[in-house]
Amino acid sequence: MIIDITRLNSGIDLSANIENDVMIEQSYIDNTEIMELKNVKLFGSITKDSEGHYIDCELSGTMILPDSLTLKPVEYDFLTEINGNIEELLNEIGENDKKIENTIDIFPIIWENILMEIPIRVESEETRDVKLEGNGWRLVTDDDTSDLNPELQKLKDLLK
Image 1 (tube, one colour):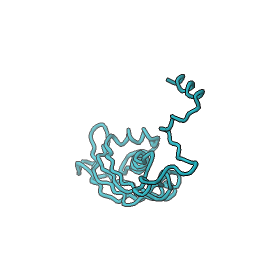
Image 2 (cartoon, one colour):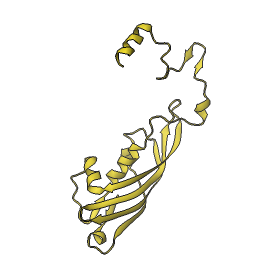
Image 3 (cartoon, helix red, strand yellow):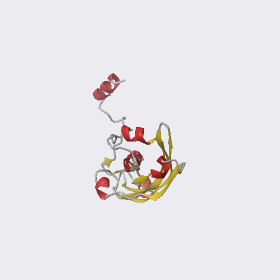
Image 4 (cartoon, one colour):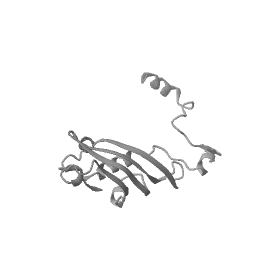
């Protein structure tokens, strides 16, 4: 997403307002757990002072993610704030090779913030009441330590 900052740099405007729908190419989404992104919007502004360009925006949208148990699609709404010096934010994510003159490409900052909003585990309303055991089987989770082999329990004590 390229933002024109010519008027900002010349001192005509004090800030460049941003109110855009964000379109993410499928090639970016393919390398993540995200199945689909919908209604991604960016609202905010870019300002400039003697130290650089600053962004103050709010990013919102809906991710379609696989359910942790059934892998069925689940909608997950997200909302995040993006604040900081644009040059420093780009340096943090390794996009520091772009020279800022009359335009700024803030897409790498947006994409990085979307990736940081992906939850570790997503459950749909339907799977919260799913039976997790049956005749001769049960779902083992990280919390289940009661059935560990006693010899392995001794090894666990070594990690403390």
